[in-house]
Length: 291
Ligand code: HMN
Image (cartoon, rainbow, N blue to C red; front, top):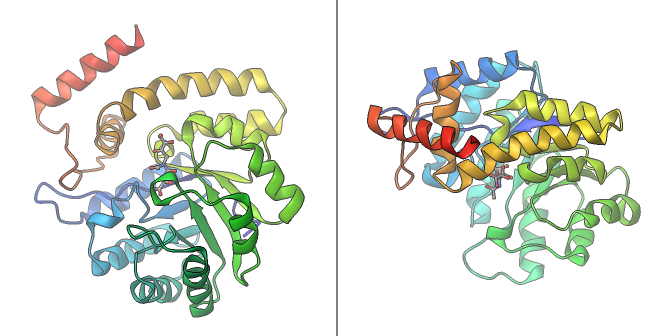
């Protein structure tokens, strides 16, 4: 896993006007992001609207993206579900398809005790040979440091996608668990913070929309140019705060379309800015927010 670093979009999944997976748009978006020099892809995560898709559709997305990427950059597949059976099935399919790493949210909805969450990840890692990135995300209930240490002891768990604001823990993971335990910072509005606290890479939604800004942050942090990283983060955050106060995935998809990669529609209950009126209102709103 340590060779998968840098700026990794949590890839959007394009749907057509009837909400069917749109393979053609998917392939075009992948090519668009490769041309913009992203370092890898994270598929079928929250940004990929995964929990609005059937298992068969999730598998199809993985197949299409792996085929389009054709080994040019690493691909990670989020295969998380509430039930171990389904996650194992998705994990094995992802391995057969040729992804480089797996990731999963912990089982959610019910409040599972620690030993069941640990069991979930142990079952998953035993089912394939791929490295597992556990996903620490507020919506599924954040892991404490003690839990992260226990997860890191499971054979096959080699990293964490850390979408929590407590970035001091990134340093602590490196110091107390292992410097080789890979950390991906998951909050785009804190990319600079995550990287400067020692994260190996960043995975997030907004890297679909404005990868260059974050590639700039990656390079500025590597060069220890904090002033430049901060200026880029401030620019990015103006767009992020605009997006999160609306329908984020829809803003990202339309913003990509304005740049030449038609990322299609979102699935309901997410909304869209597809008709001319909604689109014009969004553009006006954005202009006003920049003033
Ligand atoms: C994924 O699983 O699709 C993403 O990597 C999730 C990602 O970390 C986003 N977090 C959540 O959706 C909870 C962020 O990119 C987030 O959208 C961004 O920081 C804006 O708040």
